[in-house]
Length: 186
Image (cartoon, rainbow, N blue to C red; front, side, top):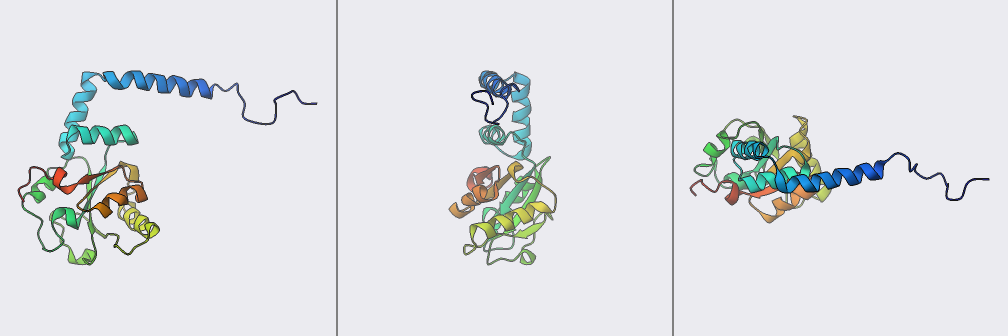
């Protein structure tokens, strides 16, 4: 006869509940009081990526990872109706340090018709008629060639539909083009 309450469930002696509690408690205590060296390092990294600190800190706190790549839509670069990016945007792209850049050619543009201003790879972006699973497949294909984890990628876009791509593909976050290129003259 088995002992009352023993139904083959998880063992309670492993201490996982206590470990989870202790980790969450320590994390909560640490967040309001980050050491100044860590804050300085994060501010420097945000500057290298061309992001404001609040955006960078939000992405890092949400995903627990550093940003390793950006996806830029042709809409965000101002390439939807012309062949060259909007003024100032190429310089902003060139200033990105320590992260890869990928471009998404929004339909009706095809990847072979888009000339990347800095020679970055161009991939076919999702179309407005694509299902969510097709959208996810297209976005992840843009990251697969470099084995880039999707939750370490920020999408810079210019439309509300592009914002929805982040949730579908599991991207780290979305930054509107006007915010990312805030110092670039239009």
